[in-house]
Amino acid sequence: MDALPSSGATQRRPTGRSADTKLLGIYLNDHLAGATAGTERATRLARTARASALGRAIEPVAAEIAQDRKALLDIMRDLGIPVRRYKVCAGWAGEKLGRLKPNGHLVRPSPLGTVLDLEALRIGVEGKAAGWQTLRRLSAVDERLDPARLDTLLERARQQQERIEEWRVRQAEEALATTVD
Image (tube, rainbow, N blue to C red; front, top):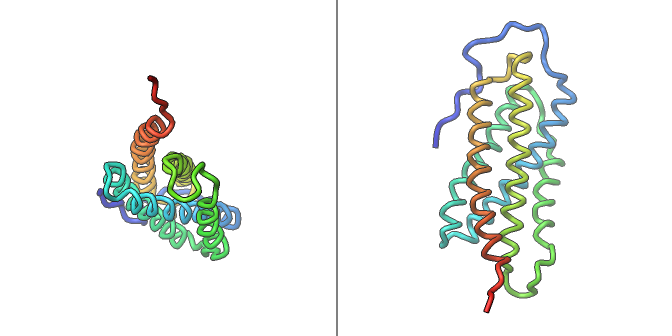
């Protein structure tokens, strides 16, 4: 795993502007709620698939997703944006409630559950990448945001998308394939 650049930019951009702290606080807390749900989902998927090839592939992605959540918290701290605990709790609870969906099996896990977990992770990582991209653009006018760090986070999100999509396709083909006699 590559280390992320420090959160302080080494070269400051001279601007007289910065982000609207109130709106940015809402935006980043919403992303933190999503990051909380994504971290929970990725960790659970890695744990339940631990002994398989999927588990070995997803475990490092789950670790990176947890690191990305920590990076978001660090950025929020650097920007002086308080964490809204109720949003973090809502993200956590939403992920737990998302597990209660019917999946075609009452007693044992459905292979469809893994496909849906991977699809949820893919959507979450796409949202995270969009958030990093927004912050990256904002770094042009807000010197508190480190463009190099955001570039690293954005590239890592793109790599996560590729790995998750590869396994999503494999699992979907396996779960949804029918046998032809």
